[in-house]
Length: 174
Image (tube, rainbow, N blue to C red):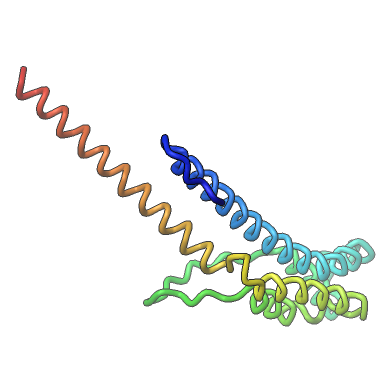
C-alpha cells in the first residue's frame, strides 16, 4: 500500500494495512478451526450412526463388547479438559500434527474408505495452509496476538498511572 501523502494520511494507511493483516490472520485462525471441526465430524458421524442404531443397549450390560463399543462412540463427543501445568514453555503443535493425532486416537471409528479419503483431503488442505508463505501460522498468529495484548496492557497501566498522578496533584493543590 503506497500512502505517502502529507497531512497524517500515512497513519491512516498504516491503520488500514494493520486492520487488513489482522483480519487475514483472524481468517486463517478460523479456517484452521474449521478444518479441525471437519476432521472431528468424520468420526463423529460414524459414532452418531452407531449410537442411533443401538441406543436401546445403552446402560444394558448384557453384551459387554457392544457396550464398550458404544462407550467409545460416546467418547467421540467428549472433549477432555486437562489442567496439566508444564514446567517450561509448552511446544506448539502444528495443525497437521493435532489432526493426525486425533485421527489416531479415534482410529477405531474410522471404518470406511470414504472417511479416510475425507481426512486425507482435510490434511491436504491444512498442509497447504501451513506451507503457504502468505498466511501466518498458528504460532505466529498466537504470538502476535499475545504481543498485542501485552502492549495494550502496558498502555492501560501507563494510562492508569497517569490518572493516579493527576489525582494526586489535584489533591495536593486542594
